[in-house]
Length: 303
Image (cartoon, rainbow, N blue to C red; front, side, top):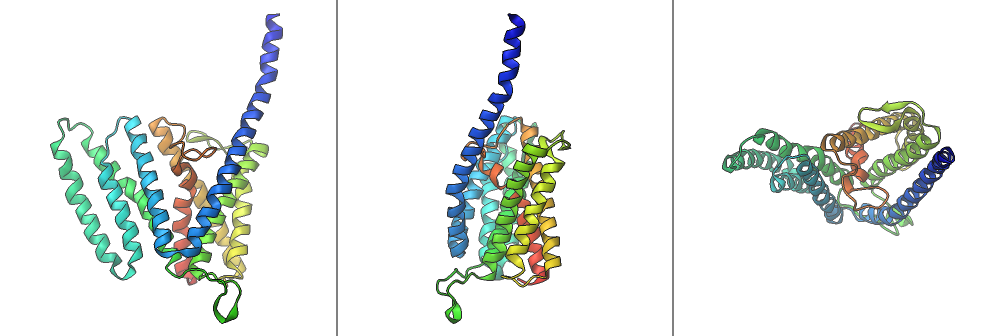
């Protein structure tokens, strides 16, 4: 009887895992169905609408990072991290004054953050907290500013110029390369890894990631780059393929970077704001690296 009970438990385990996977998948699709149209609306309008969206992402992401650090026993300065990240966003909205704003903001961050720690009763770990305070802004706020630099102010129009029925400015197309390239990679890697994954990509950082999933995601990131850049932006097809490969590599690195942060702070997800996805950082981790790659690429190819 005891052996029969063990057999039943073992046979029920795969069924339970598959059921949980289907529930998680359903939550993912539902969240994506709500979030993606909202994101595309802000891509369409650009300008200060896009600024408002990125500001919300930075606020939620900084909160998640701060809570993760508190869970691990660190005490970074939330106000300074958020303030510097917001400065990066504001500077991106004023390209002509961007360098001056960055100089003032970075200088103020150093002048404020380190002396702030002087008033702690216990100074143990103060330098680590100071380093975390500034690194949060570099990890989150700096890449988010590239979304605004890419997009620009010009809104999409229906009808477009010269009687065209539909018009999107170049900045919007480049932003779509970032979003659809990263989303396509994540989706394909998720399914390819689930069905075909065998060889672990980085088991010490993220045991669930596989080489098979990575190659599956790379296919869709290349397809997305070809579809969005060759005709709308006039990028040569061979350069579009290179861009797709770069997007795939950046997406993997961004995903692993956030996994490293979670592993170092002993949390499973950065938050629970997005059912099926976890927190805001769990959803944008790949995008933070991809947007830098696409921005630099766009500057060389011609925005």
